[in-house]
Length: 302
Image (cartoon, helix red, strand yellow):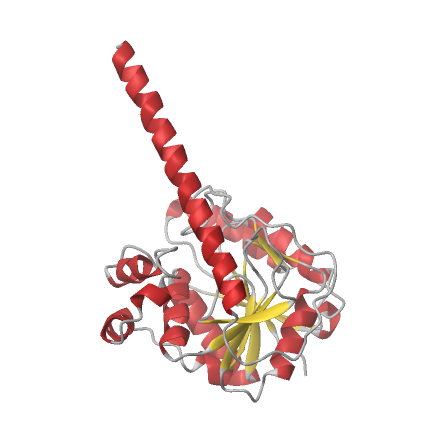
């Protein structure tokens, strides 16, 4: 049985439409159940946009079945996804999960379901992921990384049951076991800061909890060597997404074939991603420094 597709939408009509249209290009779409969770507006300003999204999703076709869950109260990003995924995996035992700003390859559903079937009985594997960062060097065709991820993914009930929603517990474990350096990809990306911000209420990220939950329990996620997902929400329209090109990729135009690989983290892939993170951090610093120089020049002119 194919995994149901779970899609979370809010107030972005055009993004939602692009996500669904890309899904429909998958051969397995017509054999897959689509479950859409539509969050309620949190204020008067977003009410019309939410209504527009709900009118659109009511017309969606091209799937085996369509179920729409319209929240009557605003859940927010984290609660919406945690409750929704929990509900679906309790009923179906597994799920493919997307948000409304992801464009997927025509081979995305095949990879998700192939991965779910291949590793269903391997407790070391917590999830399957469709996005991979656009590193310059060639990645292995498929590989494992420690932890979990959030841009087009799939899991089983046994995997999702490991989610810890108490950020303080996760942070305590990371610090007690001296895992913060590894958690931060050797300080190439500020994941610990993201977790601390979640604890302090500065972000509403379910994703950092999912990553940390998998990481502290030494679980693995399967990745493709070429990305099957592109995030088009990095335009300032998302809950936690400013305008940025850090994750911009070209979606692969071919299928990803699963190979038998060791059930362990691939250090070559991890090192390439660390290198990518550091290159982006350097680029951001250079841009910031350039802007400071421009500001200083303007101030001197005054």
